[in-house]
Image (cartoon, rainbow, N blue to C red; front, side):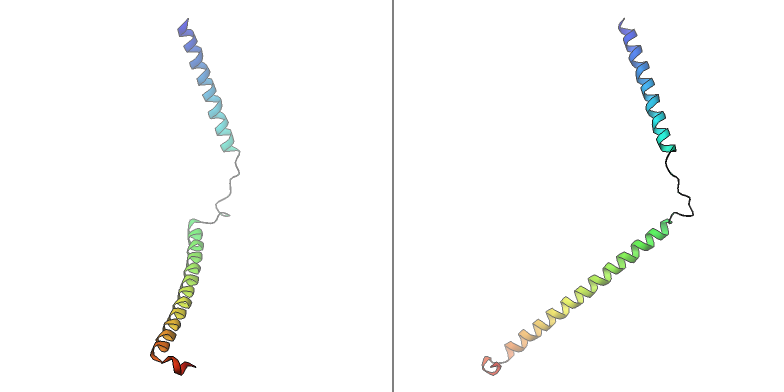
Length: 90
């Protein structure tokens, strides 16, 4: 008796597995296939990524350049103020 219950459970699990695998295959087949001619190639994606990265680097370089210039001017002003007596600044 107990073995027939196991056999029924195994048969039920196998049937369930076949139904699930069949449903997964059906979902995969119904997907829209985009022709290769209309899909951007991997090289195009890489090129676009590199363009964006280069633009980001240019912005960062410009910001660093501007920040460096500000710091240099501030340092020169401090050096100038340290060299001159405070009485001559008025």
